Amino acid sequence: MDDVADRKFEVLLEHLDRIAEELARLNRRQEAREDLTVIAHELRNLNESLQALAYAALGHQGPQVRRRRAG
Image (cartoon, rainbow, N blue to C red; front, side, top):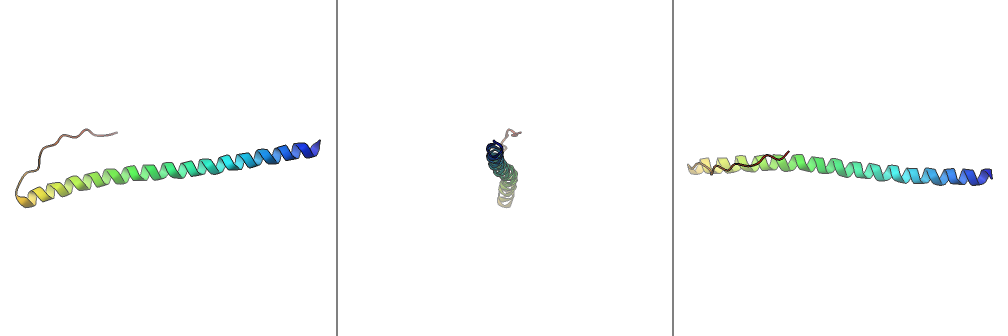
């Protein structure tokens, strides 16, 4: 009977290890998504700045576009 309990305990530990690995993988993916969100925001700001510079170089004022802020 003791061998059966030991085996059940080992199986339970194996399941817990797989769950822990999956949680670690999901956390890495979530962190990557958060990093990409920051990068996308910075690229959007950079694009707006470059457009303003391009219009200034041409001697024109860029179009006044009101954008909704996400967040």
